[in-house]
Image 1 (cartoon, each protein chain N blue to C red):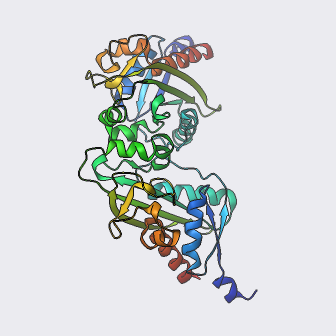
Image 2: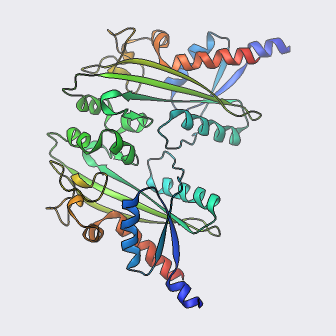
Length: 195
Length: 195
């Protein structure tokens, strides 16, 4: 394959156990002709209130083990009235108290502002990790709605499309607004500029 | 100092930023003539549902950096009706939604069983880490009570003394029942047998 073609069809490895995340990434990166392969390794995650630190540490450890161009993505839902809870530990909170737990905590709470934040961290064995951030503001809904997406999607109404939760949107529609798609687009643009 | 005396007055370093934990440890270890020094290094903590894994990784990393005989302690409150929430992330949950958040999640919940678990992990630069576990069963109270202790102590009623929350007890009384004191006693006994 000639070098130009290799560059056009660059392959990066997404270390994740979450196939929903992988599918969202695949759709976004396809817009930029970046091919992505699913790498099912359990990436080490540290406890830190800053998801950028979590993602960077995680990707460095994965690259150290696998010696491939790898990216990871770490995200969290930060609810203003709950002082940023569940934040970096959204996945554990989802597995234990779930969306219903968040709705119970938000019962009779009027200010329902929240944001989803995402950090994509990329590393190859030659350079220090690069990170790319995305964020989307919105509100916590009064009840669960929709069955697409994953995690807290059924209770998040993005400000720019406040009548639908993320779980009521197709992947492509969610990718127009989502924190993860924003971070992935920045990453894809950087990859292309770096080619 | 003669060797026998050195052994009697063995010093271990407790890596923690939590002075409440340090004071509880100091009281327990004094029962065994083990001197403990506070080591204010930020120990790395991984994200893991198993607090033993968190504590062992943490102490190995601290010893790697400091080359001292160090122990760390990791603990969590596991509420049955909340599928083990807040568990290993109790500290972040305390800092965001606090005891009031747990009480709101437990509103109108009849089965209020919970347990506190603790793991002490010790390591010196020569050996692989040893860990010691403690656990105490109890219930989540209907309201906060007491101003001693820290974290979720004001809402935890131990089964063996169900009329008082941990926050209504002196350090020495809490140490009769607590998960942390149990783990520390196992550690102290092992230290003495190892001398």
